[in-house]
Amino acid sequence: MLPFGACSQLAAKSGNADASLHVLVFNYSGASSTTLEAAERETSRIFSDAGIDIAWVHCPIPLRADSDEACAADLGVAGEVRVRILDHATENAVGGSVFGFAVAPVFATVYYSDVLRIPTLHNSDFEIPLILGCLIAHEIGHLILGPGAHASAGIMQARWESAELTRAIRGQIGFTNAEKRVLRANTLIRQRLFIFNEQRRQQMAELR
Image 1 (tube, rainbow, N blue to C red):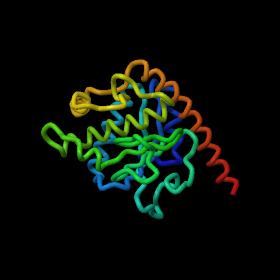
Image 2: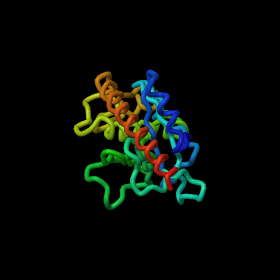
Image 3: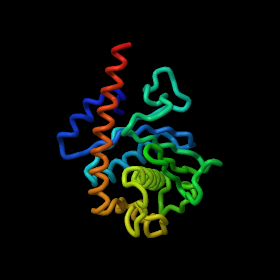
Image 4: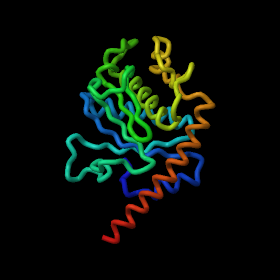
């Protein structure tokens, strides 16, 4: 996990081929840490194929005294992404959402109980984290790509049928080439914004 104050690691990325996303994860669901970590690896793999690294920060529920200070912030730092894993849809869920929803520019939500209801091919312990990782990537994709991000093919399809789920389990679903270009460009903008605001936060803390 990347400490919230270690923006130098993200700054170093700006000179390399890969862009970076800073993602905070809040797990309100029954998903185990093992499942979530496997899902994050799949999400990272999908974004890596687009030239984007993800720095994950796990925010415990409830928060602890030693929790990353970013987890306790009411509003996210500009440029970061916050992922919530919920057991099921809440009363405030966006209408029409099936597996989750995104609220730009920061919040992505995925429903874990809906993932569990997806019929798997063989081994649910292996396949569920892969599907969860794909859905997390889908919702983060909405945040980075912007409005109208649903597509007719790839991971940003609005509806996933058995064929898409099979490709997800086999690690064969991802962003289209056109989406990858937009993702990378917009992620670089978020990365610069995150670094600037984190440096400013540190400077303000030193003045106190």
